[in-house]
Amino acid sequence: MRDWRIVGIFICLLAAACATPGADRHGRNLIATGNSIVTALEARRTAAGRYPVSLAELPDAFDLGEPGSDHEFLYKPGVDSFELNLHYTLPWPRMGRVSCGFDSNTKQWACVGYL
Image 1 (cartoon, rainbow, N blue to C red):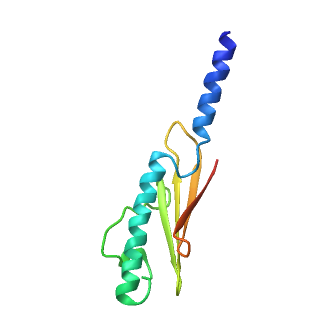
Image 2: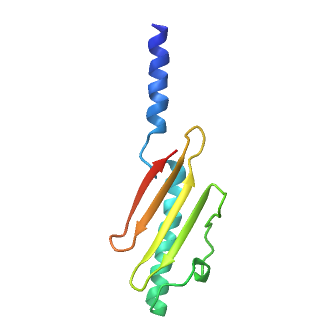
Image 3: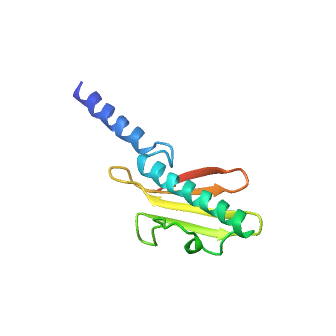
């Protein structure tokens, strides 16, 4: 009987660790920041006729993270679209990293997780 409880606990922990990438609380908060960045990018394009060369040109200060931190936003402008990517480390007790990309044509985020 005790062995089954241990197996049950292990399965619950494994299921929690395998949740949908980007759906954890940290991911939802970062994607909300990403949505604010997208709004600012679109406003800049409407006002200036083009996307900014870098996120530093946006009027609002966003927590963009940096290489080696728990998250990082990467931006690449195009003529009629842009790429916005988010990479973050899952908080304890989950392990691994998540990469999310915003598609400026479909206005959707897509995330994948990996160890």
